Structures are given as C-alpha cells and as structure tokens.
Length: 493
Image (cartoon, one colour):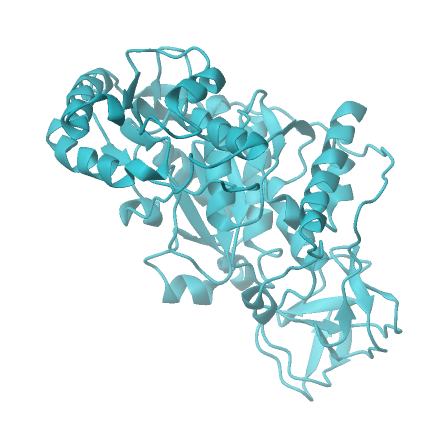
C-alpha cells in the first residue's frame, strides 16, 4: 500500500511512504501520476481542485484551495488556506448511536474510603504557591525513608502559580489544585502553603469543600519555625495511612482515561487517534469513562462533536465551549486558526481543520454525555468534553485534575513528557517507535504494515489494564517524567 484515501468523498489521498515525482500510484483502483515528491504522511490530489474549492479529507473540508490544484500535485500549506472562522452559530442536528454494552474487564486498583478508585497508591505533596517549591522538594527528599512496599512513591509537584492572581485566574488555580488533591491515585496528600499568598490555604478550602482529615493534611509554612520538620512529621503520618491500602479487583467501568495528542503528523488521524477512539468506545461500552480536551484542536471539527451531544442542553454547552475558547484567542488579538505547529506541518498536517479532524477521532463514536469546565471533576460515565487549551502538559494535567487515572497520548513526532498520572505514549508511525523506544509504549504505525485494528486494540487494552494494575510500563512514568502545569489566563499583580 502506497497511499490511503480515507473517506469515499475525499479529493486527496495520504502517502504511506515517501513517493517520488513521476511515480504512478494506485489509489482505490485509480492510477495517479505524481507531479511532485510527496513525503510520507503528506497529501496529494486525486481529483482536480479549483481555486477556492474545498479540499476534502476525512469526508470534511480541511481548507480551501489557494490556487488551482491538478491531479497528482502535492497538497499542503503552499496551495491550501484555512477556512476555520471566528464565532459561529450552530443548529442542533443530533446524529449518534448508543454503544452496545459489553461485560467489563477488571484490573487491580485501590478502593478509597470515599469509594473512589485509584490505580496508584502514592503520597503527593502539593504546594499552593510557587514560593514553597524548594521547601516541598526538601520535604519529599527527607520523607523517602517512610516508603513501604505498599506505597508506590512520595512525590511533590511544583508550579509557579498561587500568588498575585486575581478573579477567575486565581479561581482556576484553586479549582485545579482541589481536583488534584481529591485525585484517587493519591492515597494521601500534604498541601503546603506559604501563608501570605492570594490563593492561600483558607481560600483553597472554600473551593476544596469537605475532605478526609486522615488523608489530607494542610501546612502553612509561615506558622512554623521549621516548616520542613513539620512537613516531614505530617508525611510520616500520611505514609502510615497510605500503607493501609491494598490492590483489589475493580471493574473497568470505574476506569477514567484522558485522551490527548501532541506532536501529531499526517498519520495520527489514520492510526493512533482512531485506535484511541476504538479503545475509548470499548471502555465506555464497559461502563467506563473517557475525557477529551484541547478545545482549540476541536476548531474546524466541532460539528462532529456537536452532532453527538445526547441532549440539546449539552449541545448548547458544547457551542459555548467552542465559542468561549475562540473569544479567549480573540481577546488577545490572536487568530483562532493559529495552528498547526511547525512540526505538525513537517509531518503532513496542513491546516487547523486537518489537525482537528484527526484529533477528534480519539473519542471514537460514543455520544457526548457531559461538558466540563476547567478543573471540574468528571461526574458521569461515558464521554465528557473538557475545557482546556491544546498545550500538551497543560491539557494532560487538566485531564488529571478532572479525574483521569491515566492519559493516553498519541504522537507522530515524539515527546518524553509526562503528567502526574501515568502518561501512555502511542506512536502514529513505526519509524518514531523504532527511533525513540525510550519514549513510546506502543506502536500504532503497525496498522499500516498489515496488523489489524483488532490486534492493536487488544494489545492496547491489555496494556491499559496492566498499567492500571500497577505495572510501570508507561515510559514517562519509568523515567519519572511527571510535571505539573496550570492554565493561566489573567493579570499577574
């Protein structure tokens, strides 16, 4: 196979390997004489496309031809322009089917005192403000002697925020930290504040609400002569509490996965993202949950999601999700289609709609059952949309704060990053997997060399359940690449 026509209505095909000018390529029985070199992952015309006509991929418009394009020509940024616009009005035209329920698989997880489930049994140290970052690092270092065979780790997560923030910007930080504090992968949590910051512990408690005082301890550094000593003492108690938990069989209906892509290429929408969509559907059919975010990478594909909203009220929330994020761009004088990235373009993605239509395939075909604000916890089984930007670490951390037990991350270019929960890397092409085996957990590019989607689905599901049961196979987790980033939008005092 040299090239793929994705949808019957497409007027472009995608090169599976590097193709040369003058080469004749067969696409669904049609012989195409190539007029340019076509790098792997890039597109070429299989029909003549007149200037200002739509370029169709995935069955949808990915942009407008900037010039006349003839059969066999390379179709990319030099001859296609974006047709993604600003604030739009939409009509609710529901088109979805409920998934057929299937018996859930099981994994070995931790049942918490409040009946939630975790897949790790860790002790987390969370600062409310960047001023105490080095303090919590020292607490983490000194507490390592409290580790037991039943505790997966003692880990602090630093960030630069929490002070000099105002209004909704500060509220976003407090909501995010509250979601993280409640995350069931943490058996116990020490929250460390300075004392004089805007987002101090008293303000945090207003957002956090009720909490288990055996599981969560709060420390204000300015109230202690030796804050590190005080923190280590609390960590000793928290580790005793964490040590009481044991893994037990849990149905996959209680598993929550976060869906994310980054460093995408022209194969992402052909291999890795559809694979995630199939796994998402399978988990949801078992009664589980999936969360899709990176709203700017829904622009141009938003109607695909809107048509899958189960109710008109959810449709309206999805419209607001899209248009409010466009207003965020416009507020700062930025174009709403200021995407894809240079790496995306090099990998064959031409416009934002091209990227978005590949991106939304991560959520399969399940109906949209909820729309979440940034920092809001997942509340219902099924597919939820979450408000957060496209930045890899910010979006992955947002998925974590909303309750994702792990993040499934597809990539065509590769990245070593990880967020506070297991971050599973899935390559869209085999070249990346072979080059960066220290980064990538599973190669979805094998789909292009003859392996069936069913084989890869079974392998990925088994990997997910193994990781949920404690197997440290997520490469980012094994490398201890676990960083924290919070979405900031507002004035800094």
